[in-house]
Image 1 (cartoon, rainbow, N blue to C red):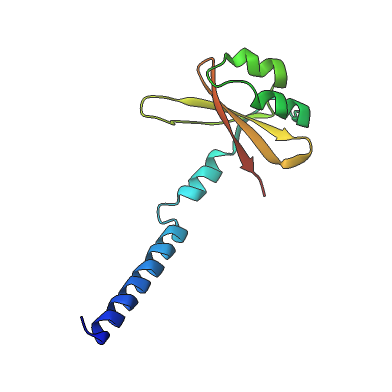
Image 2: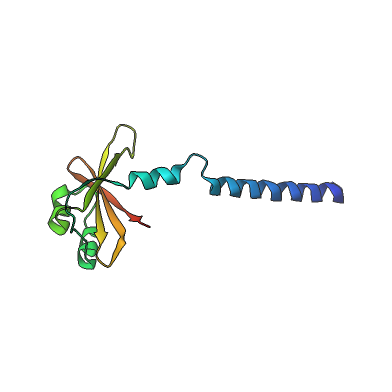
Length: 126
């Protein structure tokens, strides 16, 4: 391969890398906006509900697949219910949100399948 062909390959690889990076940032299917829309309250349950640092520590130690009541013993009623999601084909998960007392723009989102606790995530509000 001569010198001219090698530099052409380098430019093609660099251009392809830039296009791939832009594709990742562009979010063409709107996946990011869909997840934000899914984090809107469908029903407010307890307007004054917040989660303390101690409660957060306790709930994060509850094992997945524990009974919903194990979570309720620590956190009581949620601030609100979010839209249900389908984490896997044929499965529907209910989600409840708890604002953190020390950072109200951050919510702990708890997932349940039926009466079983299946995990959590955090939602960062604007």
